[in-house]
Image 1 (cartoon, rainbow, N blue to C red):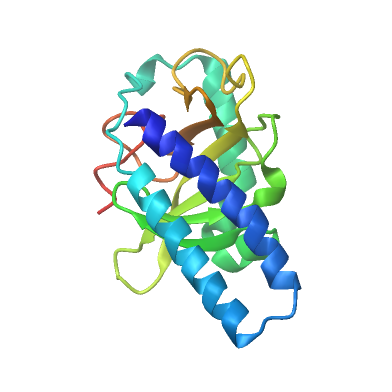
Image 2 (cartoon, rainbow, N blue to C red):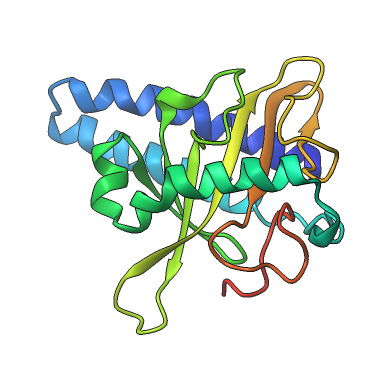
Length: 193
């Protein structure tokens, strides 16, 4: 299941890069229909990939002071993204993917590289607000092309990066805006419907 999810995540990333070329080219009616089919297939692939079971990342009260500081840096850097307009202005794009347990995915493909920076997550995760009208920022997702070894990530070993050779991608979530009873670095959050 992990292999399948990682493979589909890689396919989705490639799709994002390819689809950006479509956005800059003139679009005819047939090209627009082909683009829509491509985006639909990509969205479905990501949905299947994100149905993988949650990974227990342990008791977050055991996080080191350094890890807690890094998570604080991530919160400070992403606080402005509670307003989705700020996220979009900084290059995050709604990829039209809602996954139960994670929410809506906004991806900044320009940040996808082999460098881990707590202040620059590649993906922002949003869920419906309590009033059901808008979206609220609930988590960040870090994504890195697969390189051996795994990305350095947060200090310590609580962040469980997932990768499955030969598919070249690593992924980890950090639930910094919505408490996750299963752990801050667990893939899915039962509080996100």
